Image (cartoon, rainbow, N blue to C red):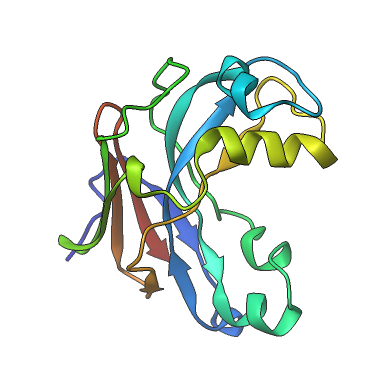
Amino acid sequence: GDHRDLHSFPTRRSSDLGRIDYEGELAVIIGKAGHNIKEEDALSHVLGYSIMNDVTARELQNSDGQWTRAKSFDTFAPFGPAVLITDKMPEDAVISTTLNGKTVQEASFSQMIFPIPRLISHISRFATLEPGDVIASGTPQGVGPMKVGDLVEVNIEGIGSLRNICAN
């Protein structure tokens, strides 16, 4: 269908990138700077949360052997459209991703492999976190490819919905 009427973020792709995957994720927004943050203090560094589609050029990720280039093309990693100002997401809140209206990912935050405090603490060991930094927190099972014309919608209870169209 034609999704141009939606207020959406287009992800532009070129044919030489190979497979492009959606990854619905919780975006953690840092509000207070820190380095070597202890897990028990980590949430005091959080401003709030938003939604991210951590778009990944999967074949490049595999051939490069690391993730930087595969996740860094122009128009990749859209996030928004709102920020929930709180230091902690409810553990029973659900993240879900739909592809053209069909649910492809769904999980609650209690199912995360790496809890938010552990992520913040780990990252702060090698990089000083600054206000405005955004951490992509990992994605539930169900990651899959996007093709031109697809509409990916990532929903998080309490935040809203991020719509992302795959375009040329």
